[in-house]
Length: 302
Image: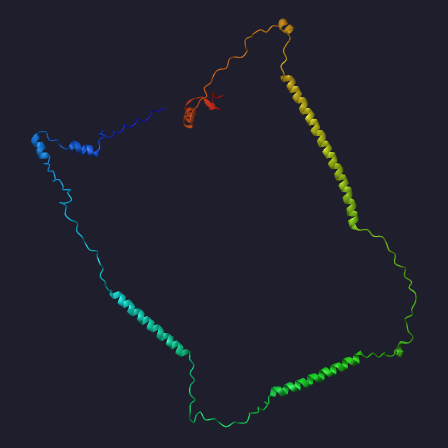
């Protein structure tokens, strides 16, 4: 096993310093030098001069000054004059616009112009329109007439076709060959018929009956197996309780065969190291030691 690496030396801490537990006022007072001698005291302190005693006599007091109230003088601003002038101009502009609107709403008819161009003309006769001679009109009339004739011809043919006229029997056929007689064929007999759905229904019913019987038999077998299993479990539990229950031996047996302590035939258990080791140590131990570790117990190779 390799020795651990040396630890680095500890780092040096900061040098100690005073906490300076003093207030700023105390520090300034301590810094001021106090004079020691009388001369220094006189030089240090300024001489004291008392002020004269005030006179409180009402006769000696000066009379109070009487002042008149301030009277404000009227003044005029240029902005007020400009505002009045602008307001007057606005009023005049509004009146002018109202007058123009009122004059525009009034109707004034224009005079009748007089001249040769406006002289009345004599009345003329009403124009009578003449019909147009178009080729399409003539062709349409011819086509309409031909179509009317075609419709009339078709109606006549249909009326003639509807009239029935029996034709005489030709003489070349001779006597009539068809003679009415009774039929010789047997009468139609109705035979019973069966539907496939009826046969399928009967088969389905038989299958359902068999399936019901099988289901009942299976359920009964399962119930019997479950009952037998419960009985077997109860018997095993009773047998286990009988085996585990304590039964004291009678005193007669103890007197006949007293209990004697005997030495054990097997050797005592030897403790073995659990070999708690990491994977790295475990690999090294496998490579160097002749023993192997399985399940936390060191064993020798066979």
